[in-house]
Length: 344
Image (tube, rainbow, N blue to C red; front, side, top):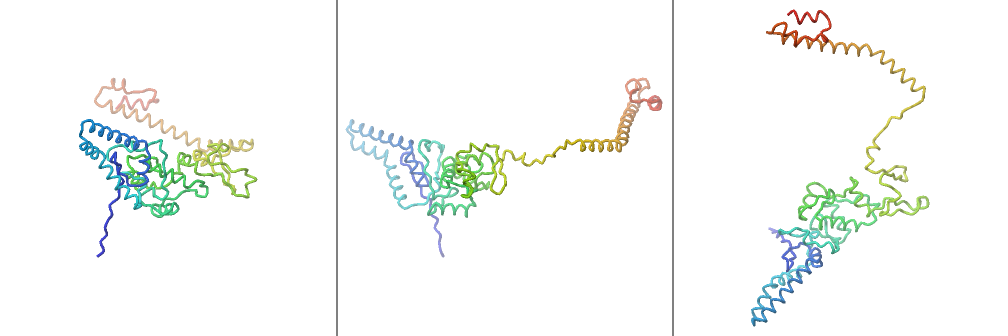
């Protein structure tokens, strides 16, 4: 029987902070950060101080032992990291194994983000090339770049999305932020958010710098003038329209409710207005009697309700009290109705 041995994930360990990194690229980013340089300087100063103190007390051997105890573990880890790096182990999109500190502590904003074009955004897969990586994410995660025919900076878009996930742990679709890379990737898997957000205005504006939607064909160059830059949308305002060569019009999503409207055009011609008035008068004459009957019936029901309540209140009371508190002459407007109250 074939026995499948599951390989343990290789970790890159910082010899000063003890932080563990799953990716070589992320570990190298950490080595270039100000945080690492500060820790390195602090460790060197502490080791020098320990050696100087040992020399003053005459305990050279003991001082050397203390120095090795202070940095020995880190040196061993660094050697292990070097051997792992030479093997070319696949990374995890700059993945980090966190202990208790916040992720923001280990990322320096002044240090530029270095993208990993061969590493997948959604898992630890590493491809042979950038194109193979895009193809892998499309097949394995159904990740597709929309409007690819207008895309002018595909690598820049990928680097932006990768930094958004790996550096800031933010979902590429809904912008929700998480404390770890794994939590962010799990969220995108559970919510089916492995896609670029072009359904909302803020998502389209966020990625507009990587697109040029004003590009046309070479045949239309003279008529359309120079191509508009993806970074310069001055001649098309947010509420404007873009007319394609086919004649179709593209409008801003914020005006969607107005595009859906189908207002009725008001005809103000004299002949049309006279016709409308005649139709209104005919309808009023036809249904006017019916409306009058409905109003009279509603009034009779109101009067009858007053009389019924008066009779119920008078049950067991004297006629004087009943007539004083129940009888409403304005409602019972005829002698027959008044007789019902006074003579039960």
